[in-house]
Amino acid sequence: TKNKLYTSVFILNEANVLLGMKKRGFGVGRWNGFGGKVDADETILEAAKRELLEESGLTVNELQEAGILKFEYLGESEILEVHVFTACKFEGTPTESEEMRPKWFPIPEVPYNDMWPDDRLWFPLMFRGQKFSGYFKFNGHLEIQDYTLEPACT
Ligand SMILES: CN1CCN(c2cc(NC3CC3)nc(N)n2)CC1
Image 1 (spheres, protein in one colour):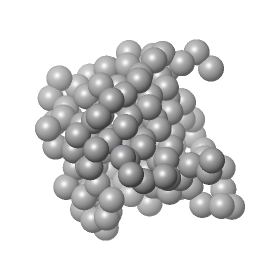
Image 2: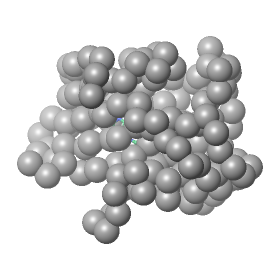
Image 3: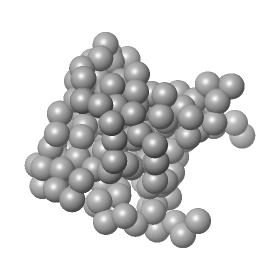
């Protein structure tokens, strides 16, 4: 089936992660990585870089694949497929956009209660550089009905 493709980019260094507060649209009021939809005329990687620049003002040369997350909402047939990337080298200054307000967080202070509930499950894998593949069945926007999360060695 054709999954709806999204990207999410996290800028990391050994101690901190750059998150964005979503100011409108899907996920408004939650901290997340910078990303959005993948257009028909671009690759997932191109979309990740484009959305990062649009939402944070940052440019990256290299993105590392961190993992893939698939989300199913009970009662809805469309599956969301989120391609997660990390980067440690970037150019520019984190700048608030219409979509996102950027903020650095020390890794122990990541505000999981103001994020999607799945994040606390896979962020530790991302911070350890362990590629992951996750599948989450959501019952509404807040409750994870069940999930699988495994190291991916692709
Ligand atoms: C704008 N996109 C939306 C999808 N997305 C998600 C989704 C997600 N959980 C799913 C239950 C919604 N969890 C994270 N961390 N990101 C990336 C940003």
